[in-house]
Image (cartoon, rainbow, N blue to C red; front, side, top):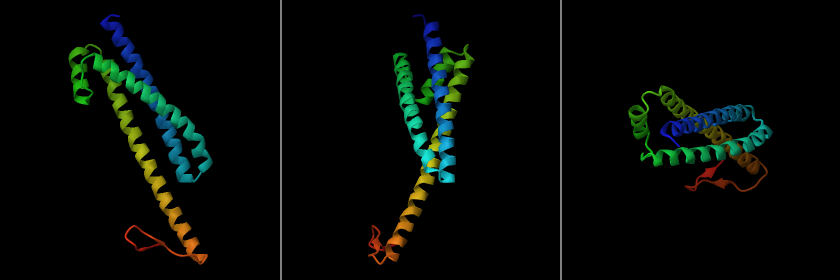
Length: 151
């Protein structure tokens, strides 16, 4: 395979990864809406799609990393940016695609973190509610990690 063919293959892989990441972001946005609206059944439904896309993203990440390592690159953003600028300056679309992929990954990370915070807040609320109900039923109070009463 020629260098040009390798580059075309690499670009196709990046495009596939970009499209998969876009689909993953859409799932995260739907998950966020379901969390805010309290639609637990929708979250369960989204979980299978989310898991499938995560598995696909892991495979694509592995393929990309293998390709970059075969090029002799350390897997660091600055090294890849330098390699793209030096080796493929005449292919601006690959650099644009790479930067888009980085931006999408950052967006997915932020959405996933935000969803985690929503889940954590809801869990704390549910724990406090359960504790209050438990105490109201005449049962013993819960205690926190420092021994304080937990309501």
